[in-house]
Amino acid sequence: MTKSLQSIAKSLVPPTQAIPDVSVSGIKLNSSQVIKGDLFIAMSGSIVDGHDFIQDAIDAGAAAIISNGRDVGKLSVPQIKVVNPRRAASIIAAEFYGHPSHDLTVIGITGTNGKTTTSALIQSILNEAGEKSAQLGTLGLIAEGFPQKSSLTTPDAISLQKTFSNLRDAEFSHVVMEVSSHALDQYRVADVDFNVALFTNLTPEHLDYHATLESYYQAKARLFRMLPLDSTAIVNESDPNGLRMAEETNAPTLTFSRSNGTSIHFSDLDISISGIQGKILAGNVTYEIDSNLVGEFNAENILAAVSVGHALGIDKNAIEAGIINCPAISGRMESFPLANGATAIVDYAHTPDAYEKVLGTLKEMSVDDSNIYVVFGAGGNRDASKRPEMARIAEVFATHCFVTPDNPRTEDPDQISKEVVSGFSGHEFSLFSNRGEGLKIALDRTAKNDTVVILGKGREEYQDIMGEKEFYSDLKIIRQYQ
Image 1: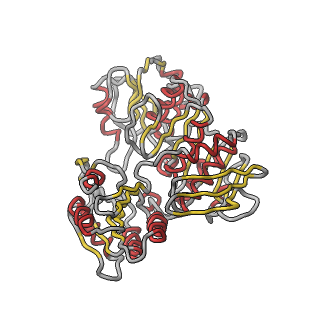
Image 2: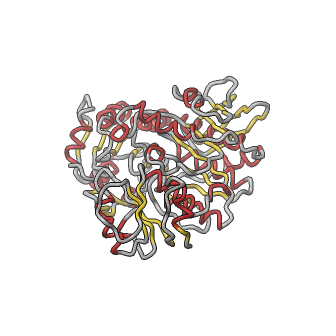
Image 3: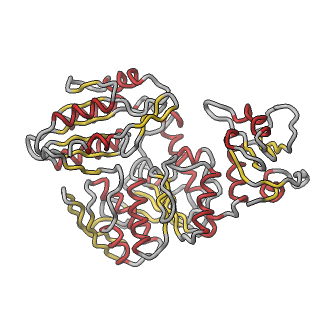
């Protein structure tokens, strides 16, 4: 694909400013990936500044440069200077790929917890309705005929628009995507046309980036402020920020709630170890719910998914079938029976709120006198304030905790663990510098009816250490005990 720089960058400059007649065959944000004919967009990051690599991009064959106007000397290729290169990247990408989200029904889901499970439920509903749908988020791209590759929860603007373009060309009709606060703050989705926006909940997370809970909320709220009048906003009225979020948009709003009322809600609900059954009332429509998912938090995720299906006008039978036929969600309360009669539970939970929901649910379902062992850690270069809080919550439900590294990134893993254990009030915990060793000792300690809960990494197959991803898999170790 080749486009003229004039056609894709025309909205970045005043009408009186001429844009060189240059052909662009690709867009890159990383100078090391530039090939001949690419447009290189230089961005300033928290660690490196793309402007330092402009000459490298030119040497690699870049046809033009977009920068923030910083003086980098005389260049041998055209340069467009803009105030915000991140915003420019979104505009350029949408123009280059022909605004593919115009031709798709895009459902954006934002919130602290529940995004991935809710996405999977919605995609299952769409598939039952005969729609060709894709899911994009923490688990990567899940779409028939496409390889599933892990990525950021929400990819960069260039990758995102390219993915939309590929899905459009493959005749997909719907995309269900997780929209992170980082993506909203960094304009990655600024030129995506959302048909539905869903807010799940808000609890403290990413405060290393956003600094305050209010700033975190404001980032999430951008999704609702950008909605056009012909879209639909769906919010969780049970969350303290739900109705406030509804006020952020001019689009029609639909609410769901755990409690009865005028919102979409369960009129009858039974949660057990075997799953979730009940009835959801949505106006004059009643949906019969039968799901293999467990826990009150998953009942809320089901409410969210049914609300989206209802808003899209999907047939009642397809919505009900989508819920019951939704396959197990990778790394979300996944259960693995062990040879000795114990059970291993793998969950991606990495926030205090998620810890409380997962561990509280498992405690309620556990057999009397059985043990719950919790293996967990905290990620490096992330909000440090939640580390002791995670330990405090784990201690409430656990017989014993096993504190291990979990993607320390560029931080000292021993220091991270020290901050985690400061939240314990007792001594029922063990420290490990090697996650695999800690997990094995926890599994060795189990007996019949015991549960080992492994939190944080889900099905990740790496440890992120000093910028390198070293192979590591909780699941591979668990398999040795089955």
